[in-house]
Image 1 (cartoon, rainbow, N blue to C red):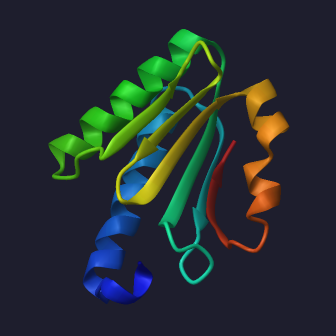
Image 2: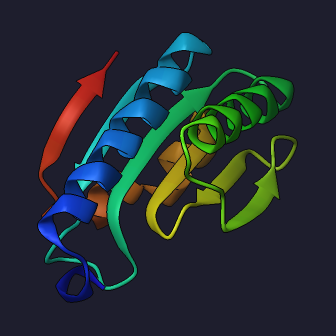
Image 3: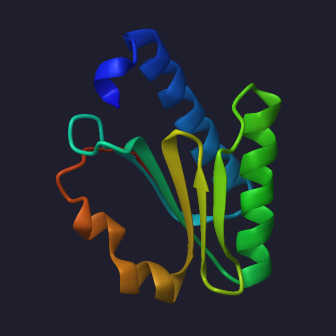
Length: 124
C-alpha cells in the first residue's frame, strides 16, 4: 500500500492520524499511542491505539473520531466491534484506530505485536 501513495498523501494521512489521536485525547481516552507502520505493514500506514473506561466511553470516542475526520474530508471505510465487546476498530484506509477497554488492550497486545513500529506520539 505505501508504494502506491505519494509523500503528500502520506503526510496528509499522518495529519489525520494525529487528528484521531487528538480527538481520542479530547474524549478522555488514556495511554494513546500513534504508531508508524509504513514499511512494516501492507494494510495500514498508521495505528492509533487508545484505552477507554467503559463500553459507552469507547462508543462515544469512536463517534467523535469518525465525526472529526469526516468533517476534515476523511470517511471511515469500515467500523468493526462494539464498546460492549471491549474493542472498536475504525478503518480509514491506511489509518486504523483501535479503541480498547484496558483488559482487551492487554489481552490483544497490539503494541507488542507491532513492536518494530516506531512510536510517533504517546499521550498518557
